[in-house]
Length: 377
Image 1 (cartoon, rainbow, N blue to C red):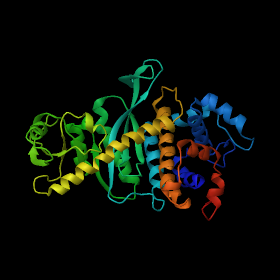
Image 2: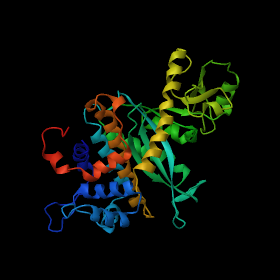
Image 3: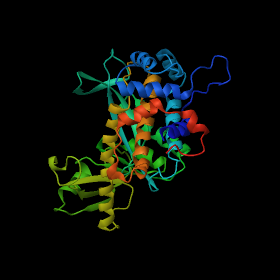
Image 4: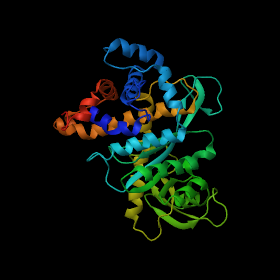
């Protein structure tokens, strides 16, 4: 099954090499096999390549780490973004893998620890793993139960690039996806005028968690227990001029992560949806669905910690390539967790770990999957 997923997506993930050229040596899947191996071993490419050569026979081609980095540096970061978004969209063309349309999205910023020298693209964060220096990535994901695919990711340098990265990722997905986009969920870190403007200009609806100040704060203060409410046409600090948004508040669902630690019993969101003339049940639906955004954070942590090998490069293209490969490995895992239970008598009899998938990527016979006419299982 993994061989089939690799065969399906490799055309989008290749390096534009002439396979008939005399110096053609490594297939696209050889590079991803190495990246899966270093994720599995939690090591750098130099050590991982040596170990992979030792573990496999001479028929398995193992690209030198220098070649891996050289291929990545031939592309601009934006080209690599497009490559992995296109690969993910090809994956989602497979029957039954796509969630019910419209497909809602979640947008977030995540940190990847950096242990190298000072770099213009790194910035501070909470102390963790003996470092306070991080690469920041903007990540656009699918927000749906059991199918939280990561659609695209890109490194960003400054906070004011948040909206530009969102615009670029949405445009890429709109270009390559054969499905209808719903709205995008954002946490309070995206409570910004430029993010709202970007969503409006790209024609995508939004639900952004509001801060407890201004109009949202006033709405929260006036609510009784278990009472939702909303107001159209309010201003917030991120906007200038006459631009306005709508705001609604709803009681925190008891299943929401961290709900027991909240000082307030409600959460507020800004949106362009009409929130005054709709039933409370619709506001409740929006608030409940926002919980899918919190689960996306868990998915991104799994991507970083389980599916990405160590990367010591300070080159943005190389880091984007590593993160993009991890994106694909994570998406294969998500797809397989949805597909494979049917072959094993149901979800209660089935468990698939990240380690299982990385082993399968490393060992998959992609050529057999390309030439076969039936599924391997």
